[in-house]
Amino acid sequence: MKLLHLIKRYAGPYWPLIVLVVLFQFAQSVLSLLLPTINGDILNDGVLVGNTDVIWRLGGWMLVVSLLQIAANTLAILCGAIIAMRAGRDMRADVFQKASAFSEQDMQRFGSASLITRNTNDVQQVQMLILMSCTMLMSAPMLSIGGIVLAIRADATLSWIVAVAVPVMLIVMALIVSRLVPIFATLQEKVDAINRVMREQLTGIRVVRAFVQEKREKRRFDKANEDLYSAMLRTGNLFVLAFPLIMLIVEVSSVAVIWFGGHLVDSGELEIGTMMIFLQYLMQILMGIMMMTFMTMMIPRAAVGARRISEVIETEASVARGTGSAAPADGTVEFEGVSFSYPGADTPVLEDVTFTAHPGETVAIIGSTGAGKTTLVNLIARQFDVTAGSVRVGGVDVRESDTDQLWANLGLVPQRPYLFSGTVASNLRFGDENATEADLWQALEIAQAKGFVAEKGLDARVAQGGTNFSGGQRQRLSIARALVKRPRVLLFDDSFSALDTSTDARLRAALDAELSDITRIVVAQRVATVQGADRILVIESGRILDQGTHDELLETSETYREIVNSQMSVEA
Ligand code: CTP
Ligand code: MG
Image (cartoon, rainbow, N blue to C red; front, side):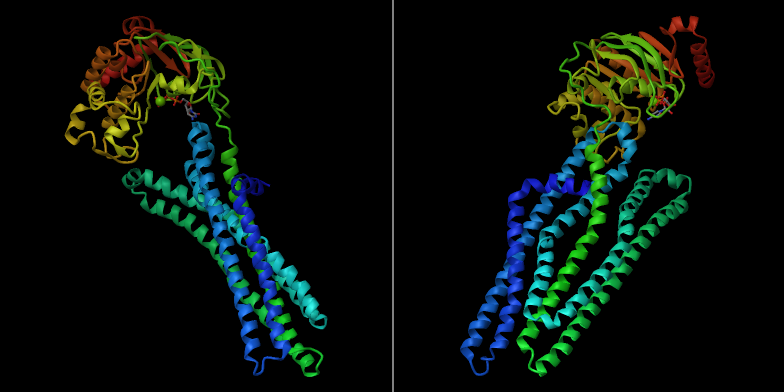
């Protein structure tokens, strides 16, 4: 079972604490079982009347035993809490680490909302179970079984009450648990749903407002919320039912002990102390069963959590890290007969793509949306592995090169630039932690971002995702971030689309002037952007239709001429 496996893996390392917990629980149970006997003996001795010495002595003993029992219990809980918290911390660290290594594909499989729930709420469920186990996994059965044995030993004539009360308690508990389990099992998915809607709503808030869809979104959230609410309510109802039932069983059985025991005492067949002993053991037995039930109730929810955590921990990132040690020799990028289809898709997104980009060259890729441009760029960064053919950077197949080395050589400006919360400087230093301020300004200058950054300063705050910058500013900042890295290959995925034509032109001129020895792969929609490239690849439905310089393509490529004409007429 995943749950056991997970607990073993994360609580296991803290075994010295577990040993302590077991000892403390053992001590606590033994002491609890001892108490009623001392208690009853006082009454049985019948020497109490007027005998202050004995009262003090036995009372003292009871006090000592009680205090020891409380101490053992406290220590067990303390150690348990430490184990549970540490196990939770380690689990979260592992889930985080795994998730960071996930490729886009893996992310899609889980969904970011679910990953967050898994790493918070699910971990918490498992943690709770560990904590509960540490406080009563051992003491609960010891109390009930020890209680039964000792109760029967104290007085066999009343034992039939135990024989009735225990099964009744067990049946009631089993009924409640069997109802709770299915609800608990779905609870985690419902929490997921809430997080998903909330997250989508927050990221898309502007779109939602612009389309006046707030009502619809609210309905969607209300539905998820209502769902969770009704599931929680059902569990709540069962708990509400459970407590009075438990109390009823406890009360009725104590009344039974006193009633029948009272008669026996009356007829001199039973000492009053023995009856008290019996009564207290009965309480302990029932308490033990109750504790075991509550623990059992935690198991299904924790098991669901454990399964969901294990799913993340056991997923091998679909693009494994390169095992080879080869480092790219230079900035040459070669595609040789590359085909690629997304997992589960029938048609390939790229087919038989072959081209080479040498250091210092600019290779531009132009094509309609959905042609496979982003996919092509992602293959260089090894976000995915090719289905056929090979992609080589610096003469080494990307699958065989050391992943860190490969990435150190690449500067990627993604189509949807993402900035992290922090400052402008902290974002730029993603490329190179040790970059000086002068380096940063130089990169900003090339990226044509100097103007607007100078107004706010390098320490200007950046909101999560960079939402407090305009689309074009974000693009330029992410270009600067790639430049700070000083890579051998720069990949621009449609990175100039949000820039106006003159900024675009100045940026390209600056890149040409400063980065003459760097391989540049530029994806673009605008002819003006690709015009000056050493080679332009026209791609359509994943195939390279034509390639050449701007002038050559004007001569040879029908498609390219169409693209040019369409943009001329728009601009005219
Ligand atoms: N695609 C997919 N799964 C993904 C990403 C893309 O199935 N995770 C598909 C898309 O549906 C599309 C094709 O792959 O049909 C090419 O996508 P992409 O390379 O992103 O196209 P681009 O040429 O980059 O399109 P755009 O100009 O719009 O960025
Ligand atoms: Mg794209």
